[in-house]
Length: 547
Image 1: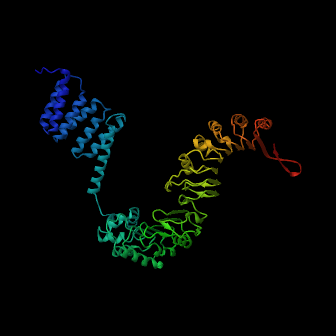
Image 2: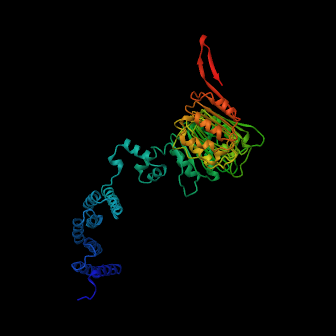
Image 3: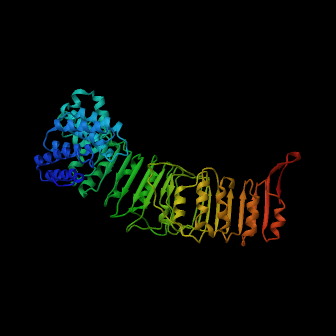
């Protein structure tokens, strides 16, 4: 008879079970857990389901799935909301190679077990693993050549959804596959060597070009000299590839100006070259000659100093120019004439640019330099497009004057303002509406806003009541202009009374402001002007009230 306290006997036996299992002595482990079950008559400190969980684990290690399944079912009956019983039952069925039955246990457990259970995540994991095993068994046991069971049209559709590299691998499956794949998309319309680990030889390029019956897309990595020279000579014969629309060469070393791509009606051109750099004259020729160009990106661009350059395209929507590394030129002497432009990634290179003035522009975003002192955005539309990558964030530490009169406040500008040091902003003019009011209130709460001397707000009624006290924190404010405001008189009176530097207030189309504020403000050294809307008069004339 053991002299050990009954309250600790079961725990000690379970520890012995685990110790024996670690030593792979599963017979001793089974003996220990069976003793723990018998000892539980006098020691209830460990739950029965916990002891059974240990015995199921030992049975599974001993490759006795039937005994394990019997105990696992008992665990489910003891506590239907405990995930361990379902997990053990499913694993036991899986050991018996009965994965369908295992899935039934897992799915039933998923319905009964709450998400708060400690083993709920493990239950979900077992479902995923079993589902994948069933899928692989079906695929391997019922695998057939798609060419023997599917219509040719369906095979071609499937191939079009595979990436270029996967299609190239399929060329080596069989002769029948080679015949189908090399005459289907994307191989017949794409020239590419994605993730190539070997040097691309002229022979490999000839083979790839030979498959291109209707070449539309070219995407190339760095090519050795002979291969690049063969590509240049092949592209010289534009009549061979009249459908080419997309040209992308990420490492066009030594060859950019030789490329005869301006003779093609391209939609997209992306060229990177650092030895030598890309001349701005070549960029100008591409934009001029490719009449349907939509996207143009050039990296390491250079050009002569002290020469004005104009880049013009009637169709271009996205332009990126990078002059990093050893490439440099007078970026401030470039002008753009691209009426359809939506994305311009170049301004940030203009380190001497001081004034930016955009009217009626339709863009997604702008990458600003750090140098502007004046930014004016009037009637601009900043479109939302998830496929356009976010441009680099630039603080506007030199900015003194900002005007934003747009339906939607540009988010790229808001992010730049959040990174800008306070102290330089002198003049701010904004138009508020239900789209921009929240952003304007956030700007007004920043220390950057407090250095203002002149403030103009159109439609201030859209700004929340919490936003107006921030105006009073502008201790240097000298001039305030409010347009199309409703009940603004009380705020203006408080501001005149509290703002020591305020000298001028202009209220345009603010009908609810009393006229007696004018003499009252004058006594305090503040000039107030009130301009009301046009009022019809006799004879068809219109009168503007000014006070």
